[in-house]
Length: 295
Image (cartoon, rainbow, N blue to C red; front, side, top):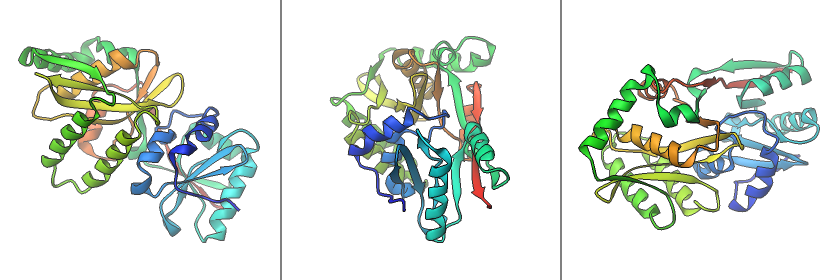
């Protein structure tokens, strides 16, 4: 029987080894993401032979991740189904992208129902386009950045390191003070603090924008593969015109040029977030579904 546990920083090497066999650009499948959000989503992980398996949620509300690794995929999926049934849980696999949908269909013909939700699809962009913002469709973004530089001539960019992490935490604390009505703030801040406490060990990469020496925007994330980077967090004051576009562009130009794609995660069905992500014209909208075992 599978044995699930809360992810610890010491698990990163073996999880990363399994993720080398990942067949998706899904933002959910990075160790750092699972580690920092483990409290909020009750994330558990398990090693089965040369497979990584995870779960989110408690009791009957538990969802599983598709097994990732090397070996007998059918056997690994069957172990999850067996575990779910033994614990009176409906076998459900969350965040299943096209490659794994096809694998499940091929391995378990007519045994799964696939349920899609647009709010959980990933927005994936070409790094080169995000760095240059060339063309008519990015005209508005370039204008925002131009105005930012004009209004704040003493701006600067720097990468996040142990010497300026506290500036990011202070910035985030100020941001919270302007979003007191957001019920998810405390969970997000806990994840951010956990990320910064383990920043180097998790292999995170990030950047800061300053005005007159004061940090006003930050962002960071981690690679999911040699080709794709995932941005997990981005914070800036909405009242400063161009703050979000400039941290996005400068971080891309200075830190992401060795990648082809950047995954900027889901919109969670939030209209404002959806509009912002669509405004950057994603190269790929990565659909994800819930695969429910009906066998």
